[in-house]
Image 1 (cartoon, rainbow, N blue to C red):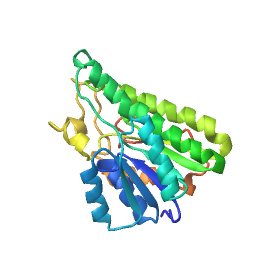
Image 2: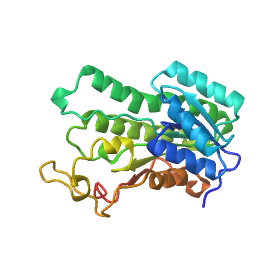
Image 3: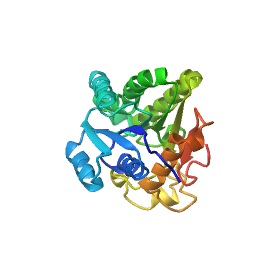
Image 4: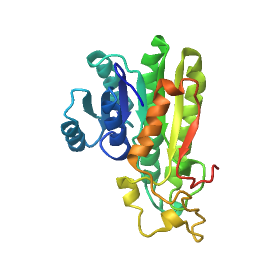
Length: 253
């Protein structure tokens, strides 16, 4: 369905979950991928699994703007021109608001929001002279519907979502498209930490939460397919769009 031959895509949060699924899908469709994460052992395991020279990995914390800038420069010099970026790196602190510490709040925004700003800014700078490219930010359906115990996560994802729309508006005149994929509950390590009962599928009146109308948890590969669509030429007239991939859990809100 997709052909990414001769494309160089940078993926953050590449070591596991949705990020790793995006990496696998891109490599299998011909792309060269630069994967960034703070889990070097998992990155190396993914490289071994893929057995491909099309995947290069970098131990980078996206909240470190200087390291991000140096890494983007290195990738451009070593691998070539970056044609796409996928922002996946993210963390979740699951606590009531009154229990959140200053450090919880700051670290959540440092990764989920500032990290998206850091890498998007650096990549946009090298894309602009070439007048083309695609940026996809993996957000969350929690960015549009309140969730209990997820205020920092939801707010940081909402900020990253709107930042990506603003980026898309500023870069539209040079042909760079910027979009968001907003998953709901997905079979990833982050989701596993929240699974205590079947409330995810059925919903919970006590938590003011709807269930999932399609009756299933998304796989990382299903989210990756949506990311690849927005990266590809098949979506070449789509920008500033938030594609909700949550089985109907937020009822389109």
